[in-house]
Length: 111
Length: 135
Image 1 (cartoon, helix red, strand yellow):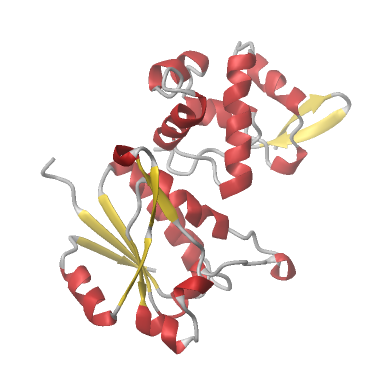
Image 2 (cartoon, chains in turn brown, cyan):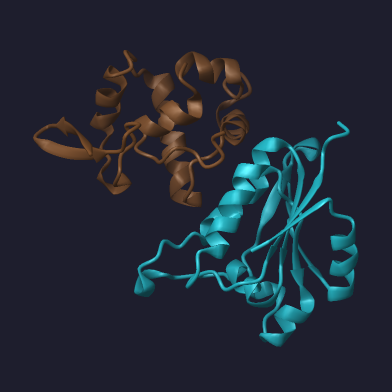
């Protein structure tokens, strides 16, 4: 099993880079994971990551992209609740990539 | 769209102790990505899946009951509960979680998802389905 080293601690990840124990997650891990995909996390990214963490906290699942898009639109405004905006932030797929950085499992319904 | 089918998922087992309830929920969420017309039915001990205030600490299993509240986000808003099954267990709809969906066409108005129906009504609803999956 692979692991990420960060600030003297070791974080186990699965073969696709998702954190195995999501209770271990600390915000600093997000940028470390993003480095691997040459992404620099901005406030706009963090808005989505924080949203995903809150969603997981409430419903115990990572939402499917369609659900995420709709919910972001409702919470952060229509200009952000569309696939174009979310794919610009997370070109590898807003569900997959953002969930990984947020320390969540791969979204249920990720087909 | 002519290829939209009516999918009904029947849940008739208690939530923990077997994997059926959780598996069913996962299949429902995954299936929701395919834009079909999905409804859920809870009968027998399956009605316990929707109970309020579930606490699984003592059995060491993840409490997945909060996930039912996400069904509305997945456009699943027809959740049928059999009246006879509730009655036989001394339960009413007030013992169940309050599940809602938001109607985008009505300014995100919250509407109830759970509908308590008799077994005769359930039989009719079942008759209208294209695909029935039982867990």
